[in-house]
Image (tube, rainbow, N blue to C red; front, side, top):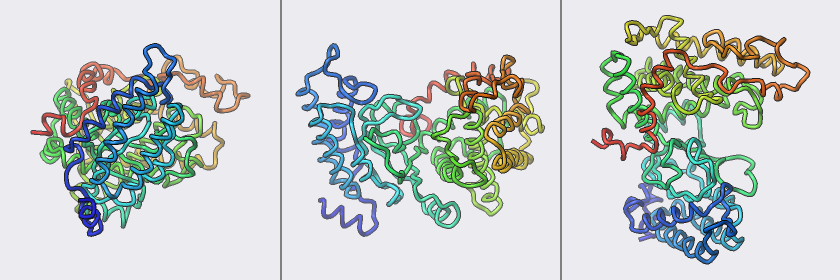
Length: 465
């Protein structure tokens, strides 16, 4: 069987005789991983001195089931054989080290999904990791995923939006860390002894994004009385079409972090900055995807219009009312987009009904993108603190700051003898509170937002139908 699968892979066919999740070893693996979870500490280690802790021998028995299941499933996935071999070695070393803080560096380096993005190709992934916007602890997790790489997307990446590390993916099944709001698989989240010099892939689950988008958008449209063009209403009702919109949006967004007139570290990973700087960066990347989508639509690409309204609706309806209000930079970006469109008369809230000027929406949205791009370009010649204030001025032109904000009072209200990173302490947790419109929308949508936890196309009844 293995030889046939390898031969198929060489021929370019999808190297899977069956879905991994349909193999009897998958529920064994999933169950064993879930059994280990409550024994783990926040850093992934197991404290055998804790009350009710199992014996090392008991944990080893369960880990042996994990290893046996991986070895049984691996022949279904010959493209991952090197990774699975390294994974087994890492798991055994974890046990030999007494289940201290786990180290999956060797298996992480062996896992290279971006090297073969064949549409429909499956991967079985097991790591000790936290799941972004999900579980903050580094628990052992197992997930089966499938690559999304249609020919039209591959052509755009090869000719226009080069992004060799990006992986569009969908869920097949997962353990509890992904029964959350997490929609990414990022190597940065995995427990390793040291960070690699560079990461070679990043995955985003477009099925979760699409299913969540559809549910929240449908509820928002109904609540707000928004009349949609026929083609956009059809898109929102089509899970696969939305997945394709999101995978294109994500591919362009991801590469934009490294393109344009940028600060030295565009991802701002190692910088301590006010959260509106992160909000503007994420919004810049989304609006760049929007701008490119307008171009694609003008060239006859049907996915271009879908991306535009995926960006608009997700940003305006879901982002501002999702998550906590503490330094919610994605929420800030959504508020800013809505306020900008409202002040330029593209969206109107009258008679308890939302109206959108569909003809002007692309032009004015691109106008906001241009304002943020100018902020970045001018920022190259500014000191950091001056740039932060310029960004604050841009945001506060459209969003009202908290009345108790020291930043809103300007430089004279701050101790400028302190280094910039210390002045971040003067930023309020909710520096730009929700408007009355969004306060009301948040109350009406809170149960819908909560219902999207762990959502995928498979477990969304409307998508499955």
